[in-house]
Image 1 (spheres, rainbow, N blue to C red):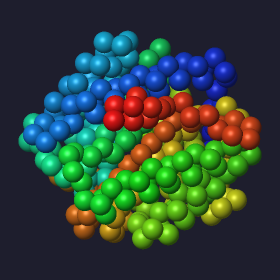
Image 2: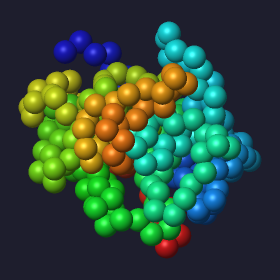
Image 3: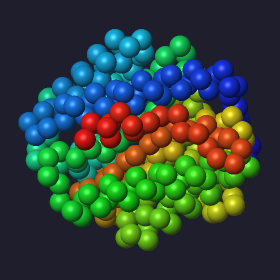
Length: 265
Ligand code: MG
Ligand code: MG
């Protein structure tokens, strides 16, 4: 394994933590506006204004991986069968019974934070709530494996074994990642496919985003003509939860937080 790992000092981790806290507060601000009838464009504006007024910059706005057109918004807003990278639009209007995954990235003082949460819109079917619950559980099972000396495959195994036991499937094309002064750094953190005890060894001070994307039906994706929106090929619901964590000895530390979201009721 020859991944180039950029280990962070404690001072650098504190800067990342500040960005991560703003991400957590931004997700909560977005949640306050989620209701039937709201467009994802409105949610995007809420997030952008909140981030900028708190001294951050939206990390995803104009983000352009190689050979790809720039992402045109602050948040990724991915309803129902959209797995990730949904582009906010006034034409995407939430309705009762929907779910919506919101992914937020912030850059502040040169350092990134990254987190995602799948929200419910009004009353949601029990089998969809179960998908959300199990996906969030799988995130924490993955996080538990992010201790110094562990390996990427332990995270993959923890996530994939948990969700497949519930009959769900793991998206393979999209993965978690290291981050710091770049939004995406080594190593990649796949949610399946790397064997337990295999893959890149995790070093103390490595900061990684763990982000299971879990589908109720097929794991296969199709990409919309906008070049970004990734959907479950069978149109069934998909959930996405993400934390940024720092690898520590014995037990990782979660830098992002769902506390602000979940204290809103
Ligand atoms: Mg993210
Ligand atoms: Mg991420």
